Image (cartoon, rainbow, N blue to C red):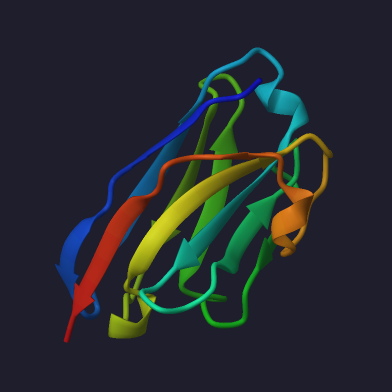
Length: 124
């Protein structure tokens, strides 16, 4: 069992940066692939970024590629999402997710555990 708690959301202006963090419980964290997803009001949850168990492979949605960076610290059981050059269309609730596979991609059903989410609002 893994519990995930996101933090770092907030209200920022377009062009600003924000860093989200996800703290995970459980000793097996280092064996899980991790991902970030987001859900805007009235829209389906969508993939944002993923990182493999070692942190050596990352994968991004086209909409955030070049602006967001996913990273993990297995010693601290955390995964982060550095978001730069934020746009109003990045406004959403952001969710951290864990997959018991060592590699995971953009499909929601690849992930086994989810956090409660943190709100990110980008004003124009």
